[in-house]
Length: 306
Ligand SMILES: [Zn+2]
Image (cartoon, rainbow, N blue to C red; front, side, top):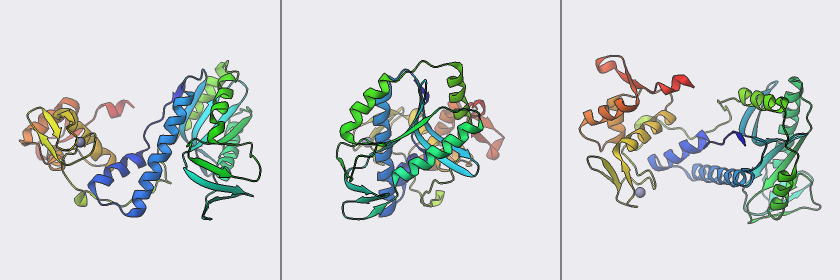
């Protein structure tokens, strides 16, 4: 059971939008591709464990002392906690005496060191709240195209050919949970931080972003808008105008969390919808109008309920 489901990381959502609304540099494109692959690997792992009859908490950002630490997947079993970091690397790598390198010799951040730091922080946090469940930490390399050369097998490293037996082991773990386990899961979810100061995004601003509606499937700007439909000239995908407008409002809100959603703003962002009052009519279906006249803006009242 997923106590906290995985959502698309905000950093990835923003990079995806910037990819079609600006010209990303090569480095930024690499950052996007790395994020896409990482997320894809995590989803793949989620699929493998989604029938586990225990508590699974995904994507936690926690703090102990002055240390922030991120957890991909945490599984609470009856007698222990599993801390799992999924890597979707492809290609050949070497791991020896704490050095993690590509086959060509470029040294990378040691993922095992990061995992063990995370392990230690989690242990401290649990002790602070009076929990002494043992924690086991594993690094799971999920991509079948990954090879790791190492002098001897490291017990915390799960290679692609070992993933199936690792998953089988998880399904055999005792999972009868008590109130104490449920309370622990609630506690961890309540301690999750939503603001991640480590997120590094390319700089962008409203004026320089390419305006216009895009296809929801392939993000082409070659779209035609009829009375009720948006049709993509590239992939043929069709979407109701209303949902396409809401999708574009979501883009604005994620790119610029403090921006005031006004008819003029959405009109300028979407470009292809006329007349302007059609935008206003659509926005009124989902958002509440605050203020008057030219100072009015739309607010999503459901945000207040969170
Ligand atoms: Zn398309």
